[in-house]
Image (cartoon, rainbow, N blue to C red):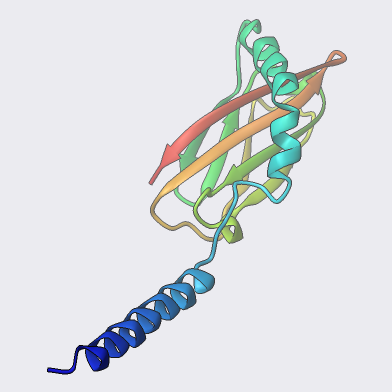
Amino acid sequence: MNFGKWIVVAFIAFAGFIATLVAVCVRQDINLVSDDYYREELLHQEKISFIQNANQLRERPEISIDGSMVTVSFSDFNKIEKGELMILRPSDNKLDRRFRVESSSNPVQQFPLSEWSKGLYRASMQWTMEGKVFYVEKIIVL
């Protein structure tokens, strides 16, 4: 028997296997929660203080899903100076949506979502009220 020939065949098969793995790995789409993920991680302590501000409120905003609408209920919308609602899909950043939250006397604001697919979403709202910044977050699974 000629073992040299089988060693060469095994080496070529192994190299083909490695090349296939590299091609599959390069084609994988890797989505971070945010494009500025690393910068946001550095601001994490600041975010914690915003959450603590929100926890001290008598009433916090409630985020819910009604069909193709995201509903935010908050009795202090009239005190909001500026705000943003973010709907993030960790596994597919193409489904991320951002909305401006306006000051309003109406305690309910609704925002349309044109496209939903089953999975996990992270709904968060950050707003400024009376010179302080607040932040709440809710996990939504469809």
